[in-house]
Every structure is written in structure tokens, then in C-alpha cells.
Length: 249
Length: 261
Ligand SMILES: Nc1ncnc2c1ncn2[C@@H]1O[C@H](COP(=O)(O)OP(=O)(O)OP(=O)(O)O)[C@@H](O)[C@H]1O
Ligand SMILES: [Mg+2]
Image (cartoon, rainbow over all chains, first blue to last red; front, side):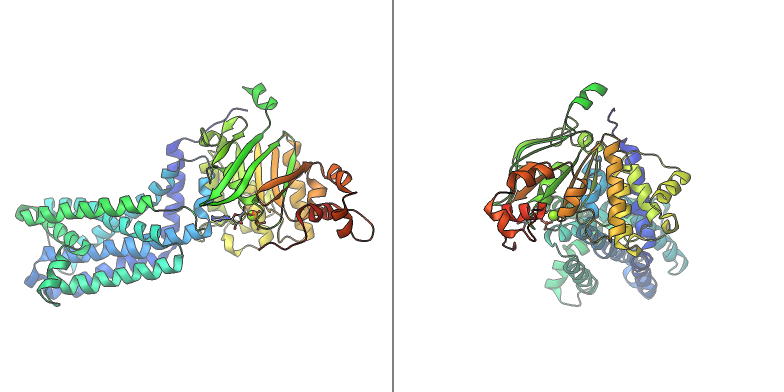
């Protein structure tokens, strides 16, 4: 009997199919993740003239990224780990990284879908139209910044074992992002808070995104925000991988 | 290539130790599973059965010792070792969103088995679950879930099958049926390593058993020989009932009466 190892591309295709089905059938969570940023975009229609179309759009996308990383991704990882889904996969002849790569790829696909929806709704409802370049760079920066929130979700799962605690913690962080981030950035809590928010994971992503949606008016502030985004991402992802455990014991 | 595998034991575990932090759960455990053998690992709760299996499955790296599956080292060549084993974990579940068909396709895929629609149906029919194809795993009864788990553990026709308490919670009919499936694996010349708390099961299906306690193997032999070797032990006689010495008496005699924490 000769031992045959399944080809990586076949393994990945199979895992992707299962992970896609999981996200797709989880309609409630999917709707939530896509609906929240769209609602924000629609309800902020009146603010487009005051704070600029790019900022409105960037805020909605940032919230969308936070929803995906904190409400969607971290919850399913924590749940599946608790149920032993990962352990069962890990005893199969597949490299461990394929299991996570597949999960994350589906989330990245979801991020792209969310961004496209925001672009479409922004155009149709808020009458925001960007340059073709703006749409492209906006999507690229979104895909980059998405890793920050996936990394943050991963870090929460790495530090907390119990899936219920993971859920409540990620919700808390999520609400903090919305409340403090959105309101704080406009100085609702004073100058000091505004500065903190500006350099928080919420602020830097929103800033970098706003810049990327209008690339022709990109400034050094935007560069700083983008660098900070990358910095946060590296830290969250590195710690999230370092402390992650595949089982719950 | 063909010859070398047939000459080797299907599983060779050589003096492995497993630690959780400072706590040593498995102490220098050695055992072999030979072709066409059903090997039972018996022991009280917390004895180290699942930990031993986890090391064989590559889920935990043993601190010392070596594990070879048809000659492949689980640490050195994990993918080759894993490709030769099928696993049913003690506590396992599948994504609740997936149907039985989805789960079957997923595991066929990760083991490199291509299944057509018809083959999926046939496999499910073999375990009398063709009507459950579109059900979720959580909607099945415990016995049906066990059948699915065993089907997945053997989907790639592995040389070694590891089953952690496969019959716990099954009714007598399902248990008998599972025994027959396990015996069919043996009939193919493959090896089975299972854990169980049922002495009746160990006597009925296992060719050899090892009794493990506090992480150490304290006896290893055929069930019949274990009984005849220990039938004169005072501890064994003192726990026997109705003047008959059973495997359970030997088990309790060797591992003590105390309930484990
Ligand atoms: N992840 C872990 N971290 C710390 N200790 C553990 C872990 N897993 C198991 N143990 C301990 O190791 C010992 C052996 O556990 P194991 O699960 O191997 O026992 P078992 O023989 O399978 O028991 P059971 O019959 O109850 O399934 C126990 O004392 C258990 O508490
Ligand atoms: Mg166990």
C-alpha cells in the first residue's frame, strides 16, 4: 500500500467549499455583518456635504470591517474550537495553515463583497461617486485594513477560551469602536479623546481609507495612518497567532 | 514498498510521555498494533487513554519517545502518518451549518478521496443513513452520529483506525453493529486501536488489551491470558462476584476500587 498525501490545492478547495457553506448558511450573522455598515452609510446621507463623501464612506467601511472581524470571524473560530471542529481537521493529513488560510480567505471575500455593496449603496443612495482610481485604491486599502480587524478577532480568540466570553468581549470591543470611535472623532468627547480616537485602530483605518478613496488628495497624514494600520495589524496578527490554541482544554 | 509495510506493526508506540505543563499524563507508554488486530486500551477515567491517542494522532507532541504509523514517524512525517490513520475523537463535532453530505465531502476531500454523488449516497446507504443526507449532524441521534464518525474515520480505508470510546452511549443493537464494522476493518488486515470502559466489549472484540492507570501501562495481553494470569490475585478474588473471575474483576483488582477524581 502506497501512501498518498492529498494535493494542497485539492485540500484548499475542499476546505474553502465547507467554509463558504458555513458562512452562507449562517444567514443571520451574514446579514448583520453586511447590514450595519450599509445602515450607517444610508443614515449618514445628510453628512456627506459636511464631512465629505470619502469620510462617510470610510466610516461605513471601517464599521463593516469591525463587524466582520469582531462579530463574524472571532465568534465562529471560538465556537468551532470549542466543539472540537479544528481538532478533527488537524488529525487529517493537511498542513495546519491550510485550515486557517481557508477560513481567512472566506472572510477576505466577505470584506470585498461588503466594500462593493458600500460602493453601490453609496452611489445609489448617498449620490457619492468617486474616481475609478479611488474605487480601486479604496478596495485595496480595505482589503489590507481588513487584516487588522481579523487580527484583532484572532487575538481575542487567542486570549479567551470560552466561546461565550469571546462573543461578549468582541461585542463590547465592537460597541466601543462604534460609540467612542464615531462620536469621538468629531470631538464629541473633547480634544484629548479626539486625539486618542484618531490613533486608535478605528481612527487610523478610517483615515487611511478616506485617503485611499480620494487618492489625488492623499497627504502625509494619510501615509501616517496607513503605516499605523499596518503596525496594528502586525501586532494583532503576530500575537493572535502566537497565543492561539487549537483546543479549549 | 508493499512488503516493508506488511512486515511492520501498523502502529508502534515506543516509551512515550505526555505532559500538560508540569503534570505528566502519560508515562513511558509502549504498545504495538499488528495487522489484523483489534487492540483495546482500558483504564479508569483520567488514566491517560485520550492523551495517548492524542499523541498518536499528532495533536500533542510527546515529550519523549517515538510513534510510528506503518513506519512513518508522527513527528517527523506527520502528513504521511496521518494519511494512514483514521480517527474518531472522544469529543468531536462538525460545523453545525453543514449537512451530513457536506461533512462527508469535506472529509473525503481532506483525505484525498474523490466521491461522486452516487458514491456519497452509497456510503450513506451502507450505514443506513441515506435519508439523513441533508440533515445536520446535530439532528442525528447519538448512535447515528457515531456511525457518521466511524464512516468518516474509515473514508480513506486507512491501515490504522483509532477510536476513542466508540460505543459509549449506544444501545445493544447499535453496539453489536459497530463491533461488526470494527471486525470488518480487522478482516481487511488493518489495525484498530480503541478505548472503552466496557469490559464486556474488550472481551468480545479485542484481540489484545492494555490496562493503563495513572498514565502507566500496568498489564498488556490477550483478555483470556489476563484473566488466567491474575485469577489467583487476592485483590482480584476479593472483588469477584458469584465465584466467577471476569475481566472486570481483574481490571478492578489491578487498578483499585477507588473512584477517580
Ligand atoms: N489539556 C489538558 N490540560 C491539562 N490536563 C489534562 C488535559 N487533558 C487531559 N488532562 C489530564 O490528563 C489526565 C489524563 O486525561 P485523559 O483525557 O487522557 O484521560 P482518559 O483516560 O481519556 O479519561 P476518560 O476515560 O475520562 O476519557 C487527566 O488527569 C486529565 O485531567
Ligand atoms: Mg478519554
